[in-house]
Image 1: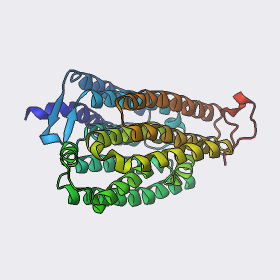
Image 2: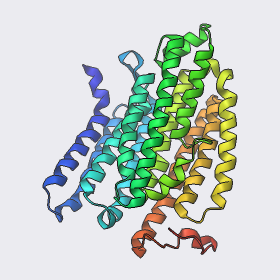
Image 3: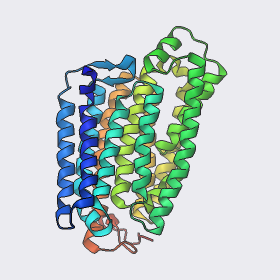
Image 4: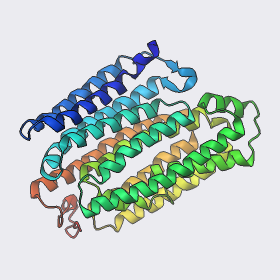
Length: 367
Protein backbone atom coordinates (compact mmCIF):
# COMPACT_ATOMS: atom_id res chain seq x y z
CA UNK A 1 0.00 0.00 0.00
CA UNK A 2 2.84 2.39 0.82
CA UNK A 3 4.22 1.95 -2.70
CA UNK A 4 1.41 4.14 -4.02
CA UNK A 5 3.03 7.21 -2.50
CA UNK A 6 5.84 7.00 -5.05
CA UNK A 7 3.32 7.71 -7.82
CA UNK A 8 2.24 11.01 -6.25
CA UNK A 9 3.85 13.06 -9.07
CA UNK A 10 1.98 11.14 -11.78
CA UNK A 11 -1.29 11.31 -9.82
CA UNK A 12 -0.82 15.05 -9.36
CA UNK A 13 -0.35 15.61 -13.09
CA UNK A 14 -3.23 13.32 -14.06
CA UNK A 15 -5.57 14.92 -11.51
CA UNK A 16 -4.69 18.42 -12.66
CA UNK A 17 -5.18 17.40 -16.28
CA UNK A 18 -8.63 16.04 -15.48
CA UNK A 19 -9.49 19.23 -13.58
CA UNK A 20 -8.40 21.42 -16.50
CA UNK A 21 -10.39 19.34 -18.98
CA UNK A 22 -13.50 19.53 -16.79
CA UNK A 23 -13.13 23.26 -16.19
CA UNK A 24 -12.90 23.88 -19.93
CA UNK A 25 -16.42 22.51 -20.33
CA UNK A 26 -18.03 24.89 -17.86
CA UNK A 27 -15.99 28.10 -17.80
CA UNK A 28 -16.77 31.03 -20.07
CA UNK A 29 -14.12 32.36 -22.41
CA UNK A 30 -12.95 35.14 -20.10
CA UNK A 31 -12.23 32.73 -17.24
CA UNK A 32 -10.41 30.20 -19.42
CA UNK A 33 -7.34 32.41 -19.27
CA UNK A 34 -6.75 30.89 -15.83
CA UNK A 35 -6.38 27.38 -17.23
CA UNK A 36 -2.65 27.65 -18.03
CA UNK A 37 -2.08 28.92 -14.49
CA UNK A 38 -3.87 25.86 -13.13
CA UNK A 39 -1.72 23.66 -15.38
CA UNK A 40 1.44 25.37 -14.11
CA UNK A 41 0.27 24.86 -10.52
CA UNK A 42 -0.17 21.15 -11.22
CA UNK A 43 3.32 20.95 -12.71
CA UNK A 44 4.75 22.78 -9.69
CA UNK A 45 2.98 20.26 -7.46
CA UNK A 46 4.47 17.46 -9.54
CA UNK A 47 7.97 18.88 -9.12
CA UNK A 48 7.48 19.14 -5.36
CA UNK A 49 6.13 15.58 -5.14
CA UNK A 50 9.06 14.30 -7.21
CA UNK A 51 11.70 16.07 -5.14
CA UNK A 52 10.14 14.62 -1.98
CA UNK A 53 11.67 11.28 -3.02
CA UNK A 54 15.10 12.65 -3.92
CA UNK A 55 16.74 10.48 -1.25
CA UNK A 56 14.77 7.37 -2.18
CA UNK A 57 16.12 4.36 -3.99
CA UNK A 58 13.07 2.13 -4.32
CA UNK A 59 12.38 -0.90 -6.46
CA UNK A 60 8.61 -1.25 -6.80
CA UNK A 61 6.56 -4.34 -7.62
CA UNK A 62 9.52 -6.66 -8.16
CA UNK A 63 11.23 -4.33 -10.61
CA UNK A 64 8.31 -2.91 -12.60
CA UNK A 65 9.25 0.63 -11.53
CA UNK A 66 12.32 2.29 -10.06
CA UNK A 67 12.38 5.46 -7.99
CA UNK A 68 16.04 6.42 -8.11
CA UNK A 69 18.18 9.44 -8.91
CA UNK A 70 18.02 8.63 -12.62
CA UNK A 71 14.21 8.65 -12.65
CA UNK A 72 13.99 11.77 -10.48
CA UNK A 73 16.44 13.64 -12.72
CA UNK A 74 14.41 12.96 -15.85
CA UNK A 75 11.06 13.52 -14.15
CA UNK A 76 12.12 16.96 -12.98
CA UNK A 77 13.57 17.74 -16.42
CA UNK A 78 10.33 16.71 -18.14
CA UNK A 79 8.26 18.74 -15.68
CA UNK A 80 10.43 21.82 -16.22
CA UNK A 81 10.14 21.39 -19.99
CA UNK A 82 6.37 21.01 -19.59
CA UNK A 83 6.18 24.21 -17.52
CA UNK A 84 8.09 26.19 -20.13
CA UNK A 85 5.90 24.69 -22.86
CA UNK A 86 2.74 25.86 -21.09
CA UNK A 87 4.14 29.38 -20.72
CA UNK A 88 5.34 29.49 -24.33
CA UNK A 89 2.00 28.20 -25.60
CA UNK A 90 -0.37 30.69 -23.95
CA UNK A 91 -0.48 33.35 -26.68
CA UNK A 92 -0.32 30.77 -29.45
CA UNK A 93 -3.17 28.71 -27.99
CA UNK A 94 -5.36 31.77 -27.45
CA UNK A 95 -4.72 32.97 -31.00
CA UNK A 96 -4.79 29.79 -33.06
CA UNK A 97 -6.26 26.83 -31.18
CA UNK A 98 -9.70 25.93 -29.90
CA UNK A 99 -10.58 24.59 -26.43
CA UNK A 100 -7.43 25.55 -24.50
CA UNK A 101 -8.42 23.28 -21.61
CA UNK A 102 -8.20 20.25 -23.85
CA UNK A 103 -4.73 21.27 -25.00
CA UNK A 104 -3.37 21.80 -21.49
CA UNK A 105 -5.12 18.71 -20.13
CA UNK A 106 -3.71 16.42 -22.81
CA UNK A 107 -0.28 17.99 -22.29
CA UNK A 108 -0.43 17.14 -18.58
CA UNK A 109 -1.52 13.56 -19.29
CA UNK A 110 1.39 13.25 -21.70
CA UNK A 111 3.90 14.43 -19.10
CA UNK A 112 2.49 11.97 -16.56
CA UNK A 113 2.90 9.09 -19.03
CA UNK A 114 6.49 10.08 -19.78
CA UNK A 115 7.26 10.29 -16.07
CA UNK A 116 6.04 6.72 -15.67
CA UNK A 117 8.12 5.69 -18.67
CA UNK A 118 11.42 6.96 -17.26
CA UNK A 119 10.76 4.94 -14.08
CA UNK A 120 9.90 1.72 -15.92
CA UNK A 121 12.06 -1.31 -15.20
CA UNK A 122 10.16 -3.90 -17.21
CA UNK A 123 9.47 -4.35 -20.91
CA UNK A 124 5.66 -4.29 -20.91
CA UNK A 125 5.51 -1.46 -18.37
CA UNK A 126 7.84 0.57 -20.57
CA UNK A 127 5.82 -0.28 -23.67
CA UNK A 128 2.47 0.69 -22.14
CA UNK A 129 3.87 3.98 -20.82
CA UNK A 130 5.39 4.68 -24.23
CA UNK A 131 2.07 4.07 -25.96
CA UNK A 132 0.14 6.21 -23.49
CA UNK A 133 2.24 9.27 -24.20
CA UNK A 134 2.27 8.46 -27.94
CA UNK A 135 -1.54 8.56 -28.01
CA UNK A 136 -1.53 12.05 -26.51
CA UNK A 137 0.97 13.21 -29.12
CA UNK A 138 -1.21 11.86 -31.93
CA UNK A 139 -4.04 14.07 -30.67
CA UNK A 140 -1.87 17.14 -30.15
CA UNK A 141 -0.29 16.87 -33.61
CA UNK A 142 -3.69 17.38 -35.25
CA UNK A 143 -5.00 19.84 -32.71
CA UNK A 144 -4.92 22.89 -34.98
CA UNK A 145 -7.63 21.28 -37.18
CA UNK A 146 -5.99 22.63 -40.34
CA UNK A 147 -5.41 20.34 -43.34
CA UNK A 148 -1.65 20.18 -42.72
CA UNK A 149 -2.16 19.56 -39.03
CA UNK A 150 -4.66 16.76 -39.66
CA UNK A 151 -2.33 15.27 -42.28
CA UNK A 152 0.54 15.39 -39.78
CA UNK A 153 -1.58 13.62 -37.18
CA UNK A 154 -2.62 10.87 -39.60
CA UNK A 155 0.98 10.31 -40.72
CA UNK A 156 2.12 10.21 -37.13
CA UNK A 157 -0.60 7.70 -36.18
CA UNK A 158 0.23 5.39 -39.09
CA UNK A 159 3.97 5.47 -38.46
CA UNK A 160 3.44 5.22 -34.71
CA UNK A 161 1.21 2.16 -35.06
CA UNK A 162 3.74 0.51 -37.37
CA UNK A 163 6.66 1.21 -35.03
CA UNK A 164 4.68 0.08 -31.98
CA UNK A 165 3.91 -3.24 -33.66
CA UNK A 166 7.59 -3.73 -34.51
CA UNK A 167 8.62 -2.86 -30.96
CA UNK A 168 6.05 -5.16 -29.35
CA UNK A 169 7.05 -8.04 -31.61
CA UNK A 170 10.68 -7.52 -30.65
CA UNK A 171 9.81 -7.48 -26.95
CA UNK A 172 7.84 -10.71 -27.32
CA UNK A 173 10.82 -12.41 -29.00
CA UNK A 174 13.10 -11.32 -26.16
CA UNK A 175 10.66 -12.68 -23.60
CA UNK A 176 10.35 -15.93 -25.53
CA UNK A 177 14.13 -16.31 -25.56
CA UNK A 178 14.91 -15.38 -21.95
CA UNK A 179 11.66 -16.04 -20.08
CA UNK A 180 11.60 -12.71 -18.25
CA UNK A 181 10.54 -9.14 -18.97
CA UNK A 182 12.22 -7.22 -16.12
CA UNK A 183 15.42 -5.41 -16.99
CA UNK A 184 17.22 -6.93 -14.01
CA UNK A 185 16.01 -10.41 -14.95
CA UNK A 186 17.18 -9.98 -18.53
CA UNK A 187 20.59 -8.85 -17.34
CA UNK A 188 20.90 -11.81 -14.96
CA UNK A 189 19.88 -14.25 -17.68
CA UNK A 190 22.42 -12.86 -20.14
CA UNK A 191 25.18 -12.64 -17.55
CA UNK A 192 24.44 -16.21 -16.49
CA UNK A 193 25.23 -17.52 -19.94
CA UNK A 194 21.75 -17.63 -21.43
CA UNK A 195 21.81 -18.68 -25.06
CA UNK A 196 21.58 -15.57 -27.24
CA UNK A 197 19.65 -17.36 -29.94
CA UNK A 198 18.70 -15.93 -33.30
CA UNK A 199 15.28 -15.12 -31.85
CA UNK A 200 16.87 -12.97 -29.15
CA UNK A 201 19.09 -11.18 -31.65
CA UNK A 202 16.11 -10.61 -33.94
CA UNK A 203 14.20 -9.22 -30.96
CA UNK A 204 17.01 -6.78 -30.18
CA UNK A 205 17.07 -5.61 -33.80
CA UNK A 206 13.29 -5.09 -33.78
CA UNK A 207 13.48 -3.17 -30.50
CA UNK A 208 16.17 -0.93 -31.97
CA UNK A 209 14.03 -0.40 -35.08
CA UNK A 210 10.94 0.38 -33.00
CA UNK A 211 12.78 2.93 -30.91
CA UNK A 212 14.43 4.24 -34.07
CA UNK A 213 11.02 5.45 -35.22
CA UNK A 214 10.34 7.04 -31.83
CA UNK A 215 13.64 8.96 -31.66
CA UNK A 216 13.77 9.75 -35.42
CA UNK A 217 16.93 7.79 -36.12
CA UNK A 218 17.95 7.08 -39.71
CA UNK A 219 16.52 5.23 -41.64
CA UNK A 220 13.33 5.48 -39.54
CA UNK A 221 13.13 9.27 -39.61
CA UNK A 222 11.10 10.05 -42.73
CA UNK A 223 7.90 10.92 -40.86
CA UNK A 224 9.50 13.63 -38.72
CA UNK A 225 9.85 16.58 -41.15
CA UNK A 226 6.24 16.34 -42.36
CA UNK A 227 4.82 15.91 -38.86
CA UNK A 228 6.98 18.68 -37.39
CA UNK A 229 5.91 21.03 -40.19
CA UNK A 230 2.20 20.27 -39.98
CA UNK A 231 1.74 20.14 -36.21
CA UNK A 232 1.05 23.32 -34.20
CA UNK A 233 4.39 24.92 -33.38
CA UNK A 234 4.19 24.38 -29.59
CA UNK A 235 3.40 20.72 -30.25
CA UNK A 236 6.37 20.50 -32.62
CA UNK A 237 8.58 21.86 -29.84
CA UNK A 238 7.14 19.32 -27.44
CA UNK A 239 7.74 16.50 -29.92
CA UNK A 240 11.34 17.56 -30.44
CA UNK A 241 12.22 18.10 -26.78
CA UNK A 242 10.08 16.16 -24.29
CA UNK A 243 9.35 13.12 -26.45
CA UNK A 244 12.99 12.60 -27.35
CA UNK A 245 14.15 13.19 -23.77
CA UNK A 246 11.81 10.54 -22.36
CA UNK A 247 12.61 8.06 -25.13
CA UNK A 248 16.36 8.32 -24.59
CA UNK A 249 15.90 8.00 -20.82
CA UNK A 250 14.07 4.71 -21.38
CA UNK A 251 16.64 3.56 -23.94
CA UNK A 252 19.51 4.24 -21.56
CA UNK A 253 17.86 2.41 -18.67
CA UNK A 254 16.77 -0.53 -20.83
CA UNK A 255 20.13 -1.11 -22.49
CA UNK A 256 22.28 -0.43 -19.43
CA UNK A 257 20.18 -2.39 -16.91
CA UNK A 258 18.92 -5.09 -19.26
CA UNK A 259 20.92 -5.69 -22.42
CA UNK A 260 24.35 -4.63 -21.13
CA UNK A 261 25.84 -8.17 -20.87
CA UNK A 262 25.08 -8.72 -24.58
CA UNK A 263 26.55 -5.39 -25.67
CA UNK A 264 28.75 -6.94 -28.35
CA UNK A 265 25.63 -8.26 -30.06
CA UNK A 266 24.03 -4.86 -30.64
CA UNK A 267 26.66 -2.14 -30.10
CA UNK A 268 27.74 -1.89 -33.74
CA UNK A 269 24.16 -1.81 -34.99
CA UNK A 270 23.40 1.25 -32.87
CA UNK A 271 26.76 2.82 -33.71
CA UNK A 272 26.08 2.46 -37.44
CA UNK A 273 22.60 3.94 -37.07
CA UNK A 274 24.03 6.79 -34.98
CA UNK A 275 26.64 7.64 -37.61
CA UNK A 276 24.10 7.65 -40.43
CA UNK A 277 21.71 9.74 -38.33
CA UNK A 278 24.35 12.37 -37.56
CA UNK A 279 25.46 12.60 -41.18
CA UNK A 280 22.05 12.73 -42.85
CA UNK A 281 20.35 14.89 -40.24
CA UNK A 282 22.92 17.66 -40.34
CA UNK A 283 23.51 17.63 -44.10
CA UNK A 284 19.83 17.67 -45.08
CA UNK A 285 19.08 20.40 -42.52
CA UNK A 286 21.33 22.76 -44.49
CA UNK A 287 19.16 22.50 -47.61
CA UNK A 288 15.82 23.24 -45.93
CA UNK A 289 13.77 26.35 -46.72
CA UNK A 290 11.22 25.85 -43.94
CA UNK A 291 12.27 26.58 -40.38
CA UNK A 292 10.28 23.73 -38.83
CA UNK A 293 11.64 21.21 -41.33
CA UNK A 294 15.14 22.52 -40.67
CA UNK A 295 14.64 22.07 -36.92
CA UNK A 296 13.26 18.59 -37.59
CA UNK A 297 16.41 17.52 -39.40
CA UNK A 298 18.55 19.22 -36.76
CA UNK A 299 16.69 17.17 -34.16
CA UNK A 300 17.40 14.04 -36.19
CA UNK A 301 21.10 14.86 -36.16
CA UNK A 302 21.04 15.38 -32.40
CA UNK A 303 19.44 11.96 -31.97
CA UNK A 304 22.53 10.50 -33.60
CA UNK A 305 24.82 12.09 -31.03
CA UNK A 306 22.69 10.69 -28.22
CA UNK A 307 22.67 7.24 -29.80
CA UNK A 308 26.47 7.25 -29.71
CA UNK A 309 26.26 7.29 -25.91
CA UNK A 310 23.93 4.27 -26.00
CA UNK A 311 26.41 2.44 -28.25
CA UNK A 312 29.31 3.24 -25.92
CA UNK A 313 27.32 2.40 -22.76
CA UNK A 314 30.01 3.33 -20.26
CA UNK A 315 29.54 5.40 -17.09
CA UNK A 316 31.28 8.33 -18.79
CA UNK A 317 29.07 8.01 -21.88
CA UNK A 318 25.93 7.79 -19.74
CA UNK A 319 26.86 10.97 -17.87
CA UNK A 320 27.63 12.66 -21.18
CA UNK A 321 24.17 11.71 -22.44
CA UNK A 322 22.54 13.30 -19.38
CA UNK A 323 24.43 16.56 -19.98
CA UNK A 324 23.67 16.46 -23.69
CA UNK A 325 19.95 15.92 -23.10
CA UNK A 326 19.80 18.99 -20.86
CA UNK A 327 21.69 21.12 -23.39
CA UNK A 328 19.60 19.79 -26.25
CA UNK A 329 16.36 20.49 -24.41
CA UNK A 330 17.38 24.06 -23.59
CA UNK A 331 18.67 24.95 -27.07
CA UNK A 332 15.79 23.31 -28.95
CA UNK A 333 13.25 24.92 -26.69
CA UNK A 334 14.86 28.33 -27.23
CA UNK A 335 14.76 27.87 -31.02
CA UNK A 336 11.10 26.90 -31.02
CA UNK A 337 10.15 29.69 -28.63
CA UNK A 338 11.69 32.12 -31.13
CA UNK A 339 9.51 30.66 -33.89
CA UNK A 340 6.39 30.78 -31.69
CA UNK A 341 7.11 34.38 -30.68
CA UNK A 342 7.67 35.41 -34.29
CA UNK A 343 4.39 33.80 -35.31
CA UNK A 344 2.55 35.64 -32.55
CA UNK A 345 4.30 38.90 -33.43
CA UNK A 346 3.49 38.80 -37.13
CA UNK A 347 0.16 36.95 -36.80
CA UNK A 348 1.06 35.03 -39.96
CA UNK A 349 1.07 31.31 -40.56
CA UNK A 350 1.25 30.96 -44.35
CA UNK A 351 4.17 33.13 -45.40
CA UNK A 352 6.71 33.86 -42.74
CA UNK A 353 10.29 35.11 -42.75
CA UNK A 354 11.81 32.92 -40.08
CA UNK A 355 14.38 33.73 -37.40
CA UNK A 356 17.06 32.90 -39.97
CA UNK A 357 17.35 36.65 -40.62
CA UNK A 358 19.87 36.65 -37.79
CA UNK A 359 22.38 34.91 -40.02
CA UNK A 360 21.52 36.95 -43.09
CA UNK A 361 19.28 34.33 -44.71
CA UNK A 362 16.09 35.95 -45.95
CA UNK A 363 14.72 33.35 -48.33
CA UNK A 364 13.20 30.88 -45.84
CA UNK A 365 9.42 30.84 -45.90
CA UNK A 366 6.46 28.91 -44.55
CA UNK A 367 4.30 27.08 -47.06
